[in-house]
Length: 179
Image (cartoon, rainbow, N blue to C red; front, side, top):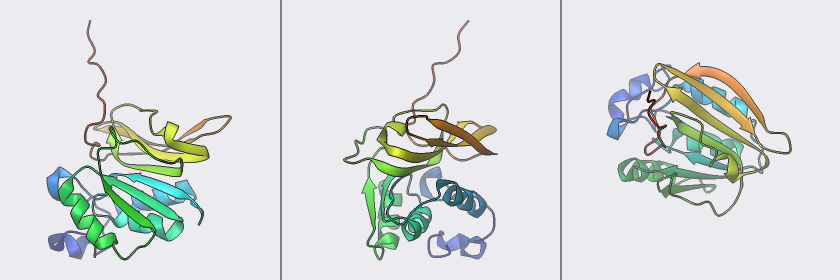
């Protein structure tokens, strides 16, 4: 993890802190990253989509467990840094794109959204293969909820835990309440 942390924070790489990244983004805490990996229950043949590459650390972890990882990052600066760090992993493809405008070429067995959305957006669920799992964080500060949605004949939505993280860039905003 220390290889993916900004230089000035290397001494804190394993502290359970959300470490700052350029552009106002942040790395998730190691405990949240661990809970994501555990909840997804990845198999070696799984195809995974990560939305929000950030430093690239979670993509590297996903690559150790899954067969193929596609990771989207909207920030050219973060994308460039992560691409360099992930270059030794043959099963990771880093893509510089806005997830809310991007169209997948395939279905995914698992999708991880590393930033939050103010409300659930089912576009990502539509990108899942049958039986696929979607990890997302929904809500606004100070209250957000981590969800695991499993697709299939009977859709399952499981509340995993409460957390707070930075929002995904360009996430659709709900209409404001009006009297």
